[in-house]
Image 1 (cartoon, rainbow over the protein chains, first blue to last red):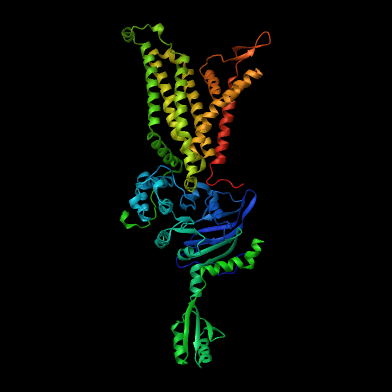
Image 2: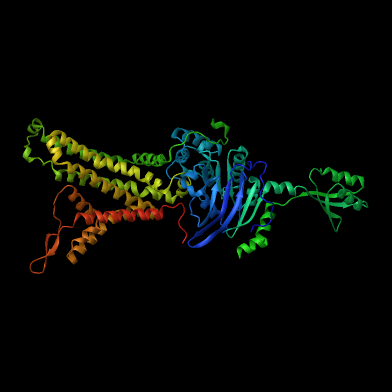
Length: 330
Length: 303
């Protein structure tokens, strides 16, 4: 049972409800070497940018490999953009995959590598060559495209892996730890590229990462796994919208009780705490400036004013410590 | 779409039919093969061998040329099943070296560089990947075995006439089938060892060992147990038995056989039926396919 985070609602960027889910799983279970790894995962992910989180051994990579058809589910089913993964190779026509580990084809230049990958995805040879150049320029390897892949640095190889995943213009991308082993500059560049992919509105992706900050920057929906079970599924955009309405204030002045009462009259939910501190939940449509107006009207000083929202880290930790997740682990 | 945009664009143009996707792998394999000097050298040697055999055939029907060379027709090698078998043996040796050079690195390099997930996350299946990897080898081995073999047969038939052609049609079938068995077996063994051992040179060593060590063991078994079946352990002996059957030849094999006084003497070994050799080859091929099915995975199986 997932924890009771907000239900997955279509975000602004998400497609209409009638279109197939990006990823849909129904009781998806996987056993490896007789050991259950994924336990009947059921969910519908509609986001354009889905973050896959979980501690080591949670089953993130196994889930990606199963969705790619590398492992056969022991029970249940899954659909990618409406196509069943059981359809095999045909289901992978619109998919791109950036593996976690270093992966390339020996004795090739960057452009030869991407051309081959494009052709294997079904592009005609001439188109594959053209798109290979474009993809390499897109990831910033334009100047290095005629160099052998073996001579690339770790960061360049990581970019080449991203380029091969997008060369055929997939509709769904699987990015497994894309920022692994990158220095801060390269990591920033990778995040920018992933955000550019999201902004293009032409592709959706599932991003698996240990780095919550990366996921928070790139994704609009998250799925958290723990011990092969769904610990949480939440729409990050909706979370952000909800929690942006929390305001923490610290007041000083005799008129504080009247100030709190005035805010309540305006529809705010207020909770005071010792030390003249308080938390205000603003209702829909009420501007934060109202707080300042109320303070001025009641001659109250605002010594502290900060928006507070749950960070992904808090959501993640809450999911990890939730009784449901603990029960799943047990 | 100009490259200076540096932007992501989807693709919604025409796609290649899935059955043609392995050709992309094969094209790459062929390009890599022709970049190797050794491959060009071996192909050149095959061409020279074919030319020599073609000249031998031609001389049979060109008396002025024989006069110039001061040769008598009777002194020339007769153009019969034995003639084509000799050509096939030479072609098979060249094919073996080609397979030894091109086969072991084919899959091993992909395994070593974790490339299988890249291939298999695309709309190709494992059999298609294997087909793409085997195709260059099969093509190049065909170029040195049955293609020139059939060319020589057609040359001889065109010079000797329809009667010779009708009487020796089994030779053409022997050239084609005999070569096919050899090149398929070589390709399967080379690729299976490449996939299983994941490194080029161990796979090369294993391929050499597989062709020669079982032959030695089989010979020892034959001599100690005075049985003819030990030969079936050797891929080379298997091919000899199969080719002899296809070319309708009866060349005896020699070894130690029980003598009249109970001691073992050097003599003609009892023949081994051709079906047993076909059976062992089929088992070997099945073993290779099983090994490939086990090894060709995007990620190693968890145990």
